[in-house]
Length: 388
Picture (cartoon, rainbow, N blue to C red):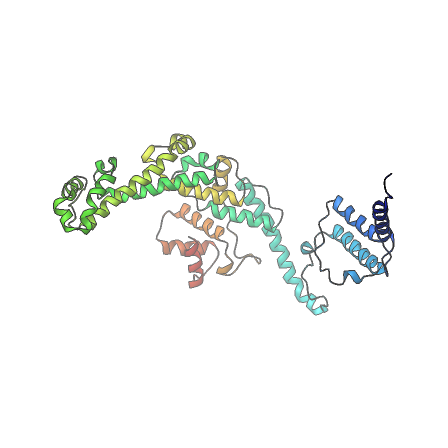
């Protein structure tokens, strides 16, 4: 016969005690632990984010106070649903809530000018967006985006524009940036070394030559009896000029060749990728890597401001003609510090288109006149010169 199930009975009694505690109201409060756990589980099931508030004092709230706070939060949420986020409300941030009638009278012309400026901005932004083939801006943030896009478009590099289509499709691609950087580094080093070495120097492996020259740098006897002298004669045949007398200078020349060769090896690893991407713009070692790198960097900057899908859309943005405003208008900026750079560039472009090339000082003055300024002071001259 098995013994009495005392252990099982004891475990059952403990579980019953825990169950009783879960379903008994918490002392001083109108809810049970089970109800609190159920509410938390309900919020978790709705994927509600956990509240971000201090827990200090929450345990001391009685049921009535908790419900009052809950009702207030619900009412606040209902107001937000009707009015939108607080930070986007027209009166957000206003601190002066007790304006006197005279204050309101003084504000009226300022507000009227602000309203006119907003209308002008909207009309101007719409015209510019249409000219650039972009959607009409619906708010100030979109106006700023359009403005930044036109500013960046004005910095388009002149070289390597035929590769725009291929580069645009890979704008921001890290692999492309690394490959063009490798090509630019090799081309710069090769160009610098081209004045010192013959063409044949770049087709040989300079590492064995360095091994033979290196002992002579620190040893007089190595220069007399080792392979140093033969290596020096070989180096002389690779130079466009005279052979340096210093062993250290001779070794530095060989190190230059080793550096160029290493950069060329890195470029070799990227040739397949670049040739397939660039297509007809790939010209082997004659490819204008630095110009392509500048074009790719510009496209990365441009597409980081706003997406551009096709080369045609890009050309339209670059060809957009931002209007030059009438500075006599009441809402037009009257100081140099308020001049938009895109407007300065547009005015300068119009001056050049109508009058041709001219000295920079004359261009600055003519641009200022077109912008509506009768006098060209130091501040205005500095702003226009810095923008151009």
